[in-house]
Amino acid sequence: MGFLDLLFPPRCAGCRGYGVAWCTACGRSVEPIAPATLDTIPLIAGGRFDGALQRAVHTFKYGGRPGLARELSPVLIAAIEAAEIGFQAVAYVPLHPERRKARGFNQAERLAAQVARRTGRPLLDGLARVRATPAQVGLSQPERQANLARAFTWTGARPAPQGLALVDDVCTTGATLEAAAAAVRQAGGSIAAFLVLARAQTLPTVPVVTLPGQPACP
Image (cartoon, rainbow, N blue to C red; front, side, top):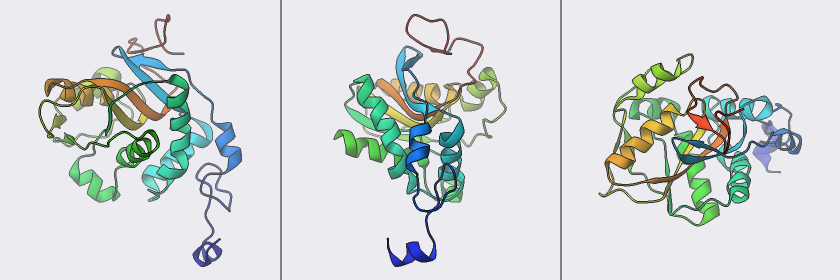
């Protein structure tokens, strides 16, 4: 433990206990979630968006702790390895420049960097958010889709790469991931998998997210 840790001991992002940024007990409490599909694309999540993981994601995004990407990413890496999903490169859902400036970092980018490092795949930053959108919280699935229409574009080399893994922190209804994937497709690329740290239990009534052999997610 360093000198600064003695003065300002780290607190667990899940339970707020002192000593580590993400404690073993909170890590064990994460409930695994089966792979699903979103618009026919595999959707891999590290766990359900509740309990300690939900608190940790909020701390990560809004508590000014970008370093939590390193602590939390093993949850997602374990899910990727269990799913044995293949992809050629890693991209991430971008923030609008104004929101990124206000937050100081993009949480999806930080997670994607960890995924790229652990899987040995290149990290690409070809997606851009070209339209600022209101917060998605409280919006229905159709409202989220309308909110995100034409919000993303591919600014990297064309055609966009094939077999990208697209990373975000949370999947609620899938509208953000779908909108970003549409921008990749419009640029000639394809998405091999959506990778998210957590997936919400509350899913749209329209069967956007499905499990193999089921009409909708649990």
